[in-house]
Image (tube, rainbow, N blue to C red; front, side):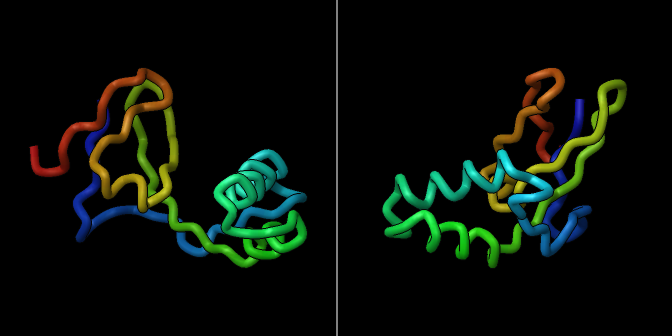
Length: 94
């Protein structure tokens, strides 16, 4: 079981960028999302937008299973499940 981070003391990676070379699957998924949501009109425009995006990831370690990261904006919802055990993370204040 893991515990969510408090907003005033969380561990994170800042300025993470998706590139075609290092993260082709994630890059393409984000490009396709922008096209499907009609944020961008062309693939070229969507690729440029994604190339310029920066993501912040919160880092978690679940004992007995491993390390994982979650986009910080998703953590704000308070509903984060372990990718290893599918258990819901405990509230930071518990």
